[in-house]
Length: 306
Image (tube, rainbow, N blue to C red; front, side, top):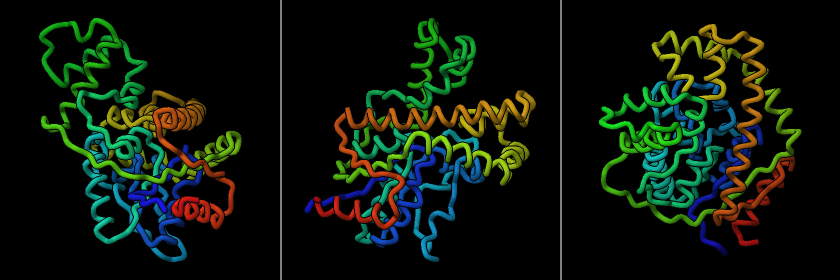
């Protein structure tokens, strides 16, 4: 029987991975570590899909980690995530429980599943995606926030400027000495949802969250002093809702552009997970449409080596 250190559950947005992880954790009597780059922020609830009710199973609260650990406006990063993951992981292991890692942020998942050391400075696809549509002048301005520019070689092209920002972002948050990271023997379960069903669920969830007050959540964050640019930095819901709140988009423009962006995001998530397989990860894919009992049985069989 394989001796696993960790169960990892990954999948695109709207695949139902969180309710499944909670149900599994309930059966295994264990705790969940989140791998979501935006659910770490307090007060950013509807926009991040932070459905905390999912962590209650049959009236029992499933303990979770790395949700609501940072203030909105702060730019948390993958290196801090590795540090905080290890703290949560070791806390759970000390209780002689098998931790369940659950989320859809590929960079966070891979950084702990692979256990790589992050020197030299790695690529940051999320940061690159956020900077991709900015002009060279805008990128230069961002870079100047990190350091005084003694020469212009970093900013002679947009590509070089983005890489320079990537490096500065790394050094702004990472100790000089290289940290080691343990090699974990992880059972990785992928929740595979039909593309059309995924699109349908994404659209339905977007309408639901807007009805529940997602626009008011963004207004409240801005009223609390969070700068609109800092909210836009988080992308997806916070980008488009903020642009609507500050008058840059109409409601209809916001809705249409956000819906498209979430569909594209889910597609990029799947592209990342397929890339993980090419990079040597074994992901055991499971149909999202299976009854919960069958999903749990699927994982239990894998834990036994079947």
